Length: 124
Image 1 (spheres, rainbow, N blue to C red):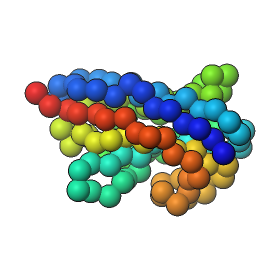
Image 2 (image 1 turned 180 degrees about the vertical axis):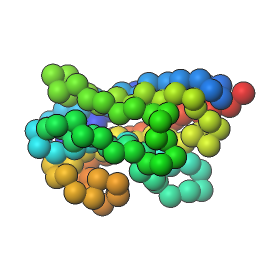
Image 3 (image 1 turned 135 degrees about the vertical axis):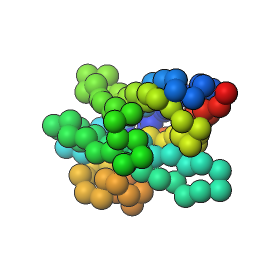
């Protein structure tokens, strides 16, 4: 099992930037992947981005492509989400997730372990 702790959320104005971090501990799988999801009030949790641990291949939702960048630091067992040009529609609780596999990375079913979430609010 992997323990995940997110940080870096907060309140930001439209057009601003935030960087989220997700620190992982426990049984880290070198051939697995990690991802970010988000859930706005009254909506389903949706995929944001994912990165494969072995080769850093990345995947993005169309809604964030070109604005968000996912990355990882293997030495620190930490994943990041750099969020630029933020919009009010990006307001949500952001969750990081981990998996020992590299399938279904755009779906909740593809992940085994989840963090507790961090709130991101984009508002003027």
